[in-house]
Length: 336
Length: 303
Image 1: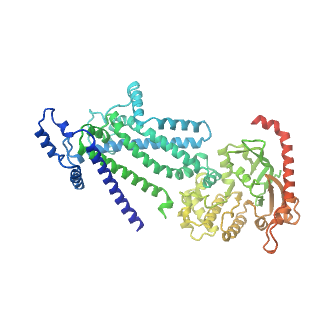
Image 2: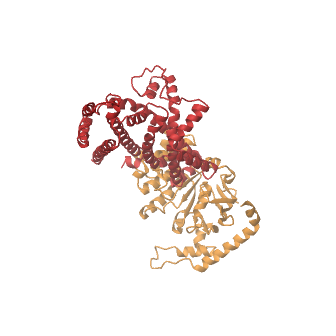
Image 3: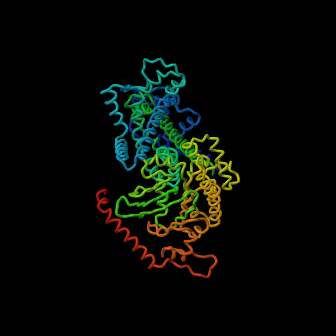
């Protein structure tokens, strides 16, 4: 009964959140200066032509009226037609989503690995120079924004020592036998590791740029959480059982310390996904973020709305997944 | 130094790292023979728990053992590296901690917390370790050991958790068990049961037991010998009968006098007289001054 109420509450709050996002986006991009119709027509277009096109896209009606027409269509699964690309918005957006999801997921894996690794080292060698070094690394990773990391990586591993690809998602010369846009996933499933390597060579630098600030956050949170956990009685008792310190940290302290870190990592992950907008642009990576910038430049209202709404759905989904994981990893919540 | 003692602490001094002239344990001697039950008595802050922590290498970082030896089954623990020392104690000694509510890991099942040292250090198979855990849980009078093994700590009561911790302490058949005020955190009604259980397990397994407590009544019930600490210094080391019949140190005598007696409920509670405490403190100060004058130079050189 409680579980059911929890799920219902969740659905209602999600709906309200998405509605709020829709209202704000719709209002802001229409109040902001710039006219999509003016950008579609050549400079010498007549007033009649402009008015005809405006009516075609429904832009001659009031904002409130436009909103409810759009909302009604969205509820039927119709997100409208992109003004600049002249295709179905939902199709374009879903086509680009896998690229961004794969990039974000790779960044999350890198960030977690670095973050957990650094926190472990700082705990294992606490009160030594190693702990101070980790603090310095965290400070640097956190104070430099992701796009500057991106530039630094391009200059280092793209220009000075050209090890990685600096542009695109995959080499255009490659023949892709894929049925979906989850290239990385499909290349792994189909054992086409040559393509996997090519994809990773493109993704690794943007993923690291996105991951570094998050890695620092995870490391810092987990480190202070571990510091508290290491003083708990059950950690003391594990030491008296004869286990080496490394195992005491990994088996007895880590799982307890990771719980509070995880909830905050979820929040930080939404920042990471926000960061894909600029990073994808920087690396000409064909994902949602890159598409979003094109849409804004072209004043492509239906497309902007579609992208922002999809980002909102992503953020809600991340929070949901974090909550589920927390319940799953915490036996006190699992067996009430 | 006694040759046949299983645990032999000799001349152990522990100091603050920040002030190495400040001793927390003052040249402590303590022996526990195989199968012996020894009480370690003292008031809060007397250094009782610190002795246990020194054996298990879980001293807080702020303090340090500067001299003396802790010999367990013939091995000098203080001479070993931290990890080697932990391996050494894994099979030889175990701790029954003070607070069962915080001493079990909340995210791990009970089974692993009883069997982990068996499988990870002592080479038991998973099945053998599990069987051993079931036997131990029956020995500590847990009715449904199968369910308890599957449980998480929050699903058990405080008394149940202390039983689990006692079972875990006996898991590797250690030669020595240190019980660090194992009943203090428990409900009064459960205290007696747990105390009886520890005595019963000790007798059954023939393990040596170092029972840390501030309760002389408990000492009278289960211990053969007793060491009394005051301010980190041993003031009395005797057998239990001798302790109550003719205490050698005035502090011990006052402490026995201060113990409330159920058979004389009309008697008001007596504190340890201030002049006894003053005299004992003066004795300690004198010993400290001597110790410092002998080692003052080396201490300064070290810090």
